[in-house]
Length: 107
Length: 113
Image 1: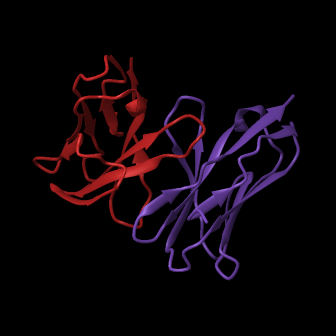
Image 2: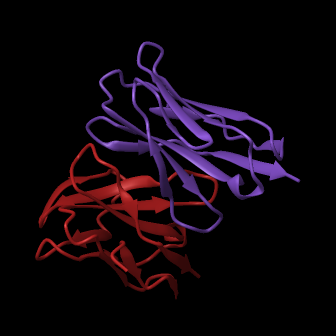
């Protein structure tokens, strides 16, 4: 089993819709969690940290479920500019990226 | 610009040649990381430094790869006797501490012909 697993997609979603991604991790001792966004042929950029209490940044909401060992990202009112690959990141003794979920917002 | 910088941005080399990449982290960050990313995959950890000390190396880092951070500031990644399988994006990132956010440079795209 991979340490961090994501559904690779692609997710093709109409503009304005709500989309959710999940990411599961295998190491229960993992301590920090993040979502990154990566545009084609660009470097990953930090989107948001993920906390057990959940956190929201505008249209984006991230949630951590330690009991079930998954993190989620919800994007509301999706925009064309949200099209990208979304990578979840888990830190225990080391940092591990998921393979990413590709999202395309359709006009 | 106070972000992470990498040089060169692109490198095309013939198989068997040596290449060296440079990374300049965010100045107050004492942790520096190297990753490799191939198409359709997430970044894969190669190695990291805390200040000038190289604290961990992935098994992906064969004997042909070496990394240094001589004064705890910039870092270099050298690949000797390049192979076609080394073609990838090499990403550098820096952070303040082990559990904190990592900030990435623009990457060096290596093509081995």
